[in-house]
Image (cartoon, rainbow, N blue to C red; front, side, top):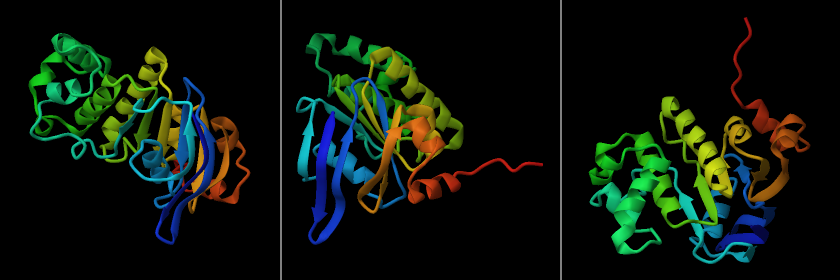
Length: 230
């Protein structure tokens, strides 16, 4: 996918200013920055949820799926897990139950969970369901918008490991939105850094994190917690 000169304005305020970015097929590209930097606005524009100027090419219409930060608010509390996943599948109705079971297995949840409701699941389990629902549409691009920030630290690693496994198994192309450079380093191949709606630095993740060129990127790295030495 290629993003060229993406601009989002709300009245006189420019939230995203001429952002250009490539997300190579089969790779995971991280988009990082502090709250208010514009990274989630880019994600919503690419997903077709926010009007924008510029172009997004290299992915078919309707083949972009987004997993949101809060898994509970993104799932219909009155809809069973099975129905929520089946809603987006691209298989005949007679095959949907089997497909739901396959998707639940992909995200390491038992097929029996198809009869449960969101309130019956933990935060990590709900996020797995949200991922399964996004995969049901067989997307060409999966956007993950801060998908671990609302989870307990104890389950964040499990969800990140799941993404890595799915990427390897399915060859997913992902745009991974985060404020956490340590997480981006673990999940992503390339990374782009946003500040005040603009892209300030991008490249292979080890290059950007290992030898940042922009002062803002260096400030983000300095803010990453480190273990104190005895």
